[in-house]
Image (tube, rainbow, N blue to C red; front, side):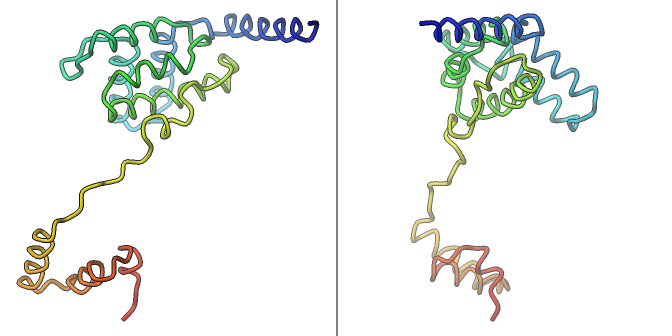
Length: 189
């Protein structure tokens, strides 16, 4: 029983420390401040800074955007996440937003949120990064599923023959052996 009380005291102390040092700041305010600081130091390319700003605006601050359409559930999740104190954001809060938006947008959202929480973690404003393992969360690396049909492959084969392209030999080797493109390119005759 004493161990549990001591653990609770330590946890309360950490939460109080986070609230004193910035962990109590609403996420929308903290992320906007973080973005302004990183942009001012010149750590981002200008185009990327604009992209990050629009992601923060849409998915954390809930700013209306003609290109981003929210369902009522997504709108509620974004508003809840933005108003939550930075130190109190849980993985469930982040996932509520990520699950309610399109997969590509969710991947970008997580890609912006993760470095922000890493930055806050280094300053001991949060205890963990609720957006860690972002690739696993948003489906990981996208792998193409479509393959050429036999007709498409034959059409491409004939186009290579007609053009007399020097890459035709590599194409033939790829098609006939199923070898990896990097191996075929580095192979010697």
